[in-house]
Image (tube, protein in one colour):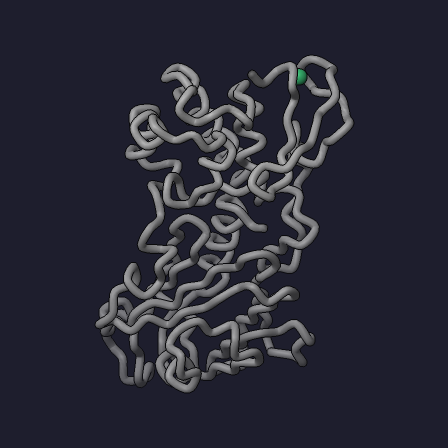
Length: 293
Ligand SMILES: [Zn+2]
């Protein structure tokens, strides 16, 4: 599943590719991809004549700010002065990705939603497993209220709100494993299985530890590990997902290597001990029993 670095890579790609992209036509190939409004025609009509003005990211959500452009020829004003037209929100889940296609061509069978501009350029949303979702939230509605997962997100790992004191406070009574805590999006936004395993390895903390037993100095180290690993991964365009694609349809793997994730039975790069794997709350967890206490 794409995690924060991959979603951030997609966000940057969208911002780069979609220069003043004004949606003229929307085609919904699979209705269940549209999470809101429940009336799909409202989604289609609501997005027409929208300038995709700016892309933000919150956790694993992509959020496009929209401006309403009824007649672009008449618009002498800079486009950014146009009226707000709410937000297009996207969650890629397991296998969703975007592709930007100049001079649109026939879509593949996994195409879920297509956005066209007046020159027939297409922003195509493809999703093999179809867990991804999209919302059009008009300007009078609240994003956080309609998208519950967005409203309940914890702080971004790069924000100043995410620090050892914060972690100490939120986990002081939690008996869940620290791995489960890191995957909990209401505690910290954007971390999934890969970055949880890699951060815990880097901080030398066993994923099985009860969260409340982790000391302040360990939390300082954990926070630093999370930030360092996420930043490094964003810099290399996301990690090694067989199913993660950027806007050019390329796999985001630029040779960044993981230390524990999917290295079961291989030697630990620090101590030579074998990397182990076990499930924690249903997720495969990879760790070095010797380096992580
Ligand atoms: Zn080791």
